Length: 375
Ligand SMILES: C[S@@+](CC[C@H](N)C(=O)[O-])C[C@H]1O[C@@H](n2cnc3c(N)ncnc32)[C@H](O)[C@@H]1O
Image (cartoon, rainbow, N blue to C red; front, side, top):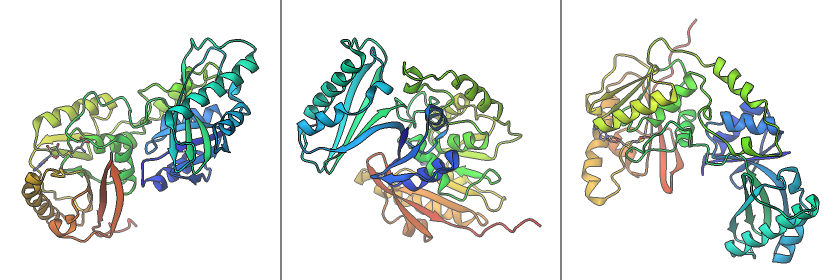
């Protein structure tokens, strides 16, 4: 079975690495999506564990189609009966990019007719569509059609710990990518001085404690009538047995707003990482540390309105001053503010383009010295 994983824009390399770590397979990257081979067990493992990806799909087939007749005839040849039962409810969703077939609605409607025809001829009965909704996604890129079955359902960034949305939170999977691209590891102090609802630190806490990203949520594949997922309960038990406790927090979050810190604490508790993180209502200007080689990963305010620019200029300058007093710390900051380095007062060794939602941002890596190697 071909399994395809979608990644946040610009972060495909991070997802590819995580996919390799979970499956030991080199994935093929096509238009921001990564494909490997696997079975239902792989689908379950990826949905449960992938921290950085957006969704996991089964690729049912792919072909070239420039007309509706070609689309219909090619879809009729695909073995939908291996994934959909005679009672399965079917919804079809299309993405089209630079192709001759260019009406989303018509493509979805013709495709659904073809899928139903295939299933009716295989099952030799009229479809009832009374069962679980199977979401089929057609991606048409330069007349090449890929037919995917969504096995995740809701995107993977929805871990289930966010009860309400804070002030401009970052998506959970993007936060995980930011951590992966930083120099933070389980042995280092991590600080988010603009922590908001705590997403970056909660993701770090889940990594630190071995809590799978999808432990507290449901997935569509668990409801597919054609799949035997009886192994999943044991997979969850095994994962739970590997969760570790922490002796004292090594992750620290500050925010000037009390409401944000309350939210962050509630989210951390729900995610099972309250013991790993210390949240404090505090202006980041008051932050100091005697520790060396700590790491900052943060998503500061962007000041998107012109009237906020002066505040952001001051805030980023002050953030730079706070950083300059820390001994050999590294700071990783995502922001769309183009003169960040000038305001912060340090040149980044790397500047990566990353989208926070639809907003084009850069992720600035400012590095302190490496800690001495232990003998
Ligand atoms: C873009 S939001 C961070 C969102 C966060 N990544 C999340 O996932 O919820 C920026 C945060 O910086 C906080 N903030 C603004 N000025 C601050 C200051 N001087 N010290 C600490 N926090 C501040 C705001 O209250 C806001 O919650």
